Length: 262
Image (cartoon, rainbow, N blue to C red):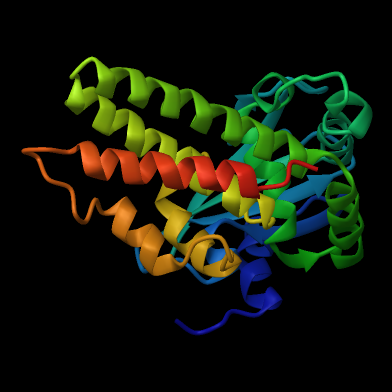
């Protein structure tokens, strides 16, 4: 797929007057920013402004921020859906403040600090394609890297993996092998997410991109081939799933011991 230049991305926004005078930065996020998109993928663009965006055509999404929502515009260009999400500069700073080290040291877990949309939005700072305000994007990404964001999400994923491992062990002991299988799969997902988050590859709320994130992170603790064999349940025997379940749980526990939380 040919690489688009910033001017190519900005042209449809300028044509529809979707870049206000108070624009601080604009950047492509999601699969298109990373080259993972396909012919059916949407294009997602974040625009950061000094003042809240308001038009007759904008939608709004409630957020635990001030102002308590983000606005969005949607349009189609050459048959592809575009969504432009507007954040105020203050809202970005508020989210960064939520993942400060002083907050982390109080023992608050990620799910109580950030909503999934906030978590995804912060994570995208590190993988976006800047169109305007590249220095601003770089500065905010440095703030994110210095924050406790990585520790928050790693601890969350490790905790979820440990809970699922315990569920699977109990279910296997009681003979509930179907439930144990599902719990083992859940444990694997959370453990692999923790492994990737430890490498700075975020996105556990979008498991469809886990293989891409795995290849990008290339963690030493587990090869892609080993991971994919587990993800696709190779070697699973419906007549006796215990060996597969035990293998998965052992790997999950090994990952938990290898991933650093801070």
